[in-house]
Image (cartoon, rainbow, N blue to C red):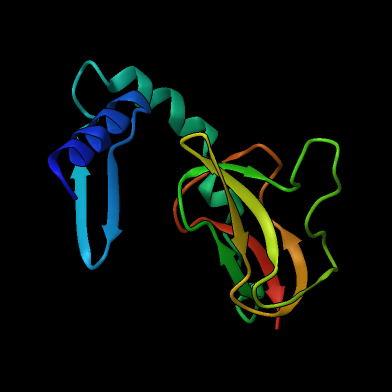
Length: 143
């Protein structure tokens, strides 16, 4: 990574109100962080917090035997490739390893999320267009 790329990452951090960004390329990893607790950033942080209902999406103890597909990044969750298309998967569908299960939009990029496991979808835990956090459970699968 060169200095120009690092500066661009810092700009993205400020532009999108992110607290942290991490990039790994060719064995070199760089992480940039900023403190959002500063007075100038407090209103932005407060407006994001209510939109992320993490506790409601977490699987309960009765679902401990189930596998989860989690968000690999922060972004906006989309169930389908376009607004008028049918969802990639629904409750009860069978999923193969490597199958696209959703899209997460992050920094204006649409990222297809693939299943790392095979199974039957028990529950879709996230609503379409809902913001998601890193490692937030998206789907519950029965192996």
